[in-house]
Image (cartoon, rainbow over the protein chains, first blue to last red):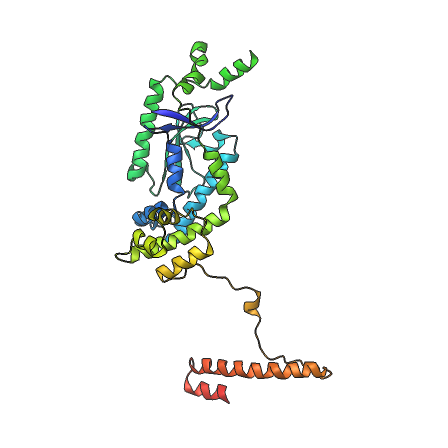
Length: 182
Length: 163
């Protein structure tokens, strides 16, 4: 397992990193490649039609669902590109938590009815490691194969970060500031 | 605070990071700058995918053969990331036997060629002759419209309209 810089400030190392599982392509890149493939989105929607027709998303057509996911992909991509405040973009994975803690599981969820989730582990202030992402059409992660896989990836990456001793407290910024002062 | 631990943090991240930097920033910028045609391409791809799945024994290979392009080319088209030419769209439409794009009504669509009721009697000779031409054209259109009405109404209404 390796890390890869996605959007990272070269001096402070703040930003978005992602994990690579045995390939040079990171999970971030893999998930966005999938999400930008309209055929993948359509297949996913067809396979999960019963979830999309549950009523939660309103009276929408298959075409509407595909187009709304596509729009979400665009919105997330653009936000990631333009933002400097990743702490604002990410939120705790658990909806009952209201503040970001170091090393906590995090997610990007653009709105209440958003279907896309980008999963990450917060290393420290404004610094995240993306572990993957999914189109979430169920309430609980355990209720869908795709999100279950993503939960396992979060656990696996957290364990690996601990092994590498990267999983420490919120002082990356402090360290950087000290370096700048010297 | 364990400073020695902190001192190594960035180095540790670097040590487990691959050197290849992601080109994702360029990709997103490309998507933002080219959003319009990428959206069109995705709409066309969705329709082709939907049509292909309905046609038994009609796979990407069949479409590739019909269009004389590679299977990889068809795969790119189906991902919705191909900047299709009008020629390619036309060829795809012909191959699939269905229109993939349509054109919205525009100003001329709503200009009806109906008789002009307010005629200025002081019109020049030219305008009068122009009116005569228009009148003939309108009569022709009226007859066509009458035919259309007959096809869609009951016999008593037909007589009423015809009279």
